[in-house]
Length: 522
Image (cartoon, rainbow, N blue to C red; front, side):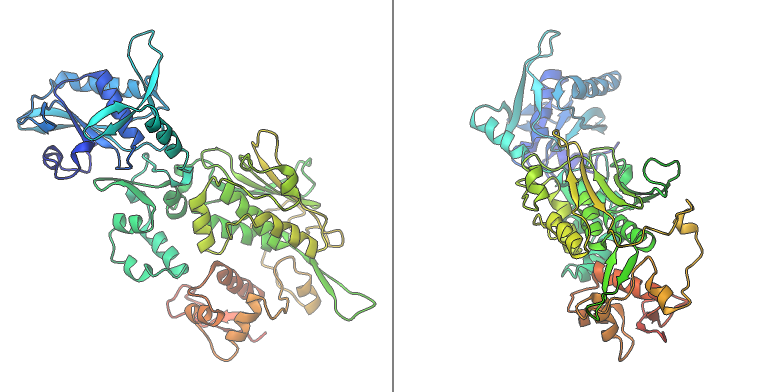
């Protein structure tokens, strides 16, 4: 594949610094291996470097015109580089190789970006019995073996790169969606949003810190692909949420499964909305000793939301296992892989006092916090415990094994709430006819969101805001005191529309930029 760099600029040092370049007159496998290892370690975070084979050097400068390579050498060298990446580098590392013609001679340019799983070590010799490895780094224009303090610093440097903050060298910057990035900036009220439409993709990606690498060889970060690619499962298999309904219990023969794939914010919203609409029911309990009734849910929605968001936040995206929500009549279980960091103890977790000392996905947490999905301060578990207590439900259960290979949250059903009624016949929830209540009592028994007139609820505040005149989304967010329409406000609008309590002024064009919301006749 051609490299995104002009070969003349490369040879004359116009595109990259000289310490990121190494010229070799001929093919020397061991010497090249050590240089590739050094560029992969990217000790000074310069973005890796280039090895140009077929060009002699003098005092670090290329000697032109180049010596070149014989055409029949190119295929053999490229195969040897591929083999060295497998057998002589740990962990495996594969640079990008491309032939170029310069002044009538063929040269081979090896692009070696900083690796995403550093530190790398290379064999000290290529003999059959040689099994000794060493770490290599760049110092100036030379490749040297890292020892002592340099080796210690290299190891500590590598330990600070979480998976979601690493470059993805299997993807291109073009795999990021400008539209998704701009929508995110607008939703969170970023000052960058007004300028984003005029910015080139790479510049916008760097501003949002989802693009890394050198200026001439940029790559998306994993977090960028997870949030701003329409199909992140292409890069991270099993990046999805599976909601499974067992009408006869987990041991029964019937079950209904629905998969949610796409960018992380989308699958979170869609799966949570699906669970809320189809599997949450509310019961009104009247008391003889007081006028106020108690409302309880079979599974409190805030606890479900925290459990699912926590699973998306902390799961391993290098593990080919989806987040799974298993629902039956007596429990709701959320399972993710792997388990929490080893600094977390199960005893503390069950007491709601566990605080992780290390985060698997710090960048994912940052974006989820911007979208108001999480606070990112180890508050998820205490919120689940509190939501279950306030709902009168049994205690939530948390579980992981000694190897921390999985994490499970179990929410037992509220004893006084009815079991999930929808889809009890095993039919797919999305295939059922639209439910239309015929009385107030029937409406209150609806197994989905129902208005609870708490003056602090976002639904109540929205209805108050539009009670005098129709308002657009931006005007509603202003009335709520938000910079932009938040995820919670979007969900509240959807709830109120579904409940028939508000309506759109242009219902035939739901996505019109002139769309406003007003109180419905109901």
